Length: 310
Image 1 (spheres, rainbow, N blue to C red):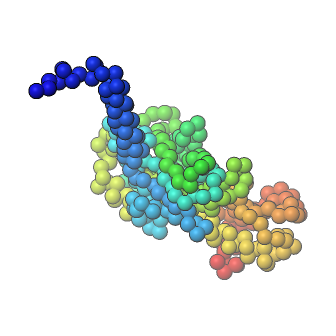
Image 2 (spheres, rainbow, N blue to C red):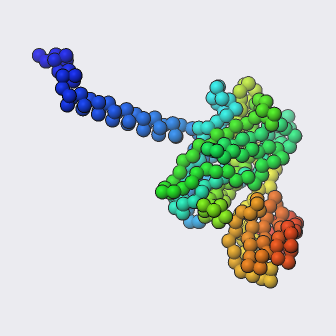
Image 3 (tube, one colour):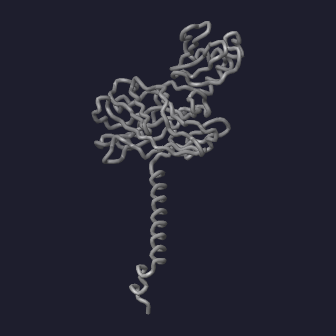
């Protein structure tokens, strides 16, 4: 009979090296497994795909229906960090043009009021802080609409996974109220210069943050909040492009050729060889440059949609 101590790996340098190799290999596999598990353990998976010139939203089907939009619920469930979440992630596939993937806020912060059964757009002290690497953006009840934040830089891959940190706090750093908070954003992509759009903005979707740190706002209360669609006007970039196309055909003396849309200082705009720029921001139409001189407002974009039959 062979005893274990007689077959000890310590007596064979070759066996000892093999044992070390196997141990390291198993440890490496366990490390990869833990990384994979950690990367995908957060919910929801806010998943997107670039297909046929558009960004498709919620291809993993983890969003909820909120009127005509999708909403991703991000629950601050960690008892150690009940006002902070870093597990939820943005994932994407088919983004084959490289560039920088970003998000853009499409609203200020909203807060659910149980007393009014409505989403408040003003009059509260909480703010949302979104952090990704060294990039940090703050959204309050009256500031933050139109901010662009970093998600990832695509280099050798057409897919991505990124986990920003979401934090709710009061503007004086005090603890926020239990409840539900919401902001609308979109996903887009630009080239390395940040000037040219590679991936047109997706349709807006909502991020809904659920806080129940003091056991004052449970899932039933959240479910009631998600039955109410906030009364808010959101950008429709496809419709904007159609309006700009129409303007180029109808008013050639001002907009003499087709141009690519891009973001300029928060405006979604097109600029022409005659130095005229046409753009939209906060639901209004603006021109600048050329015969217009400075920035000139021309009224609600809805009026121009009606004129153009859009």
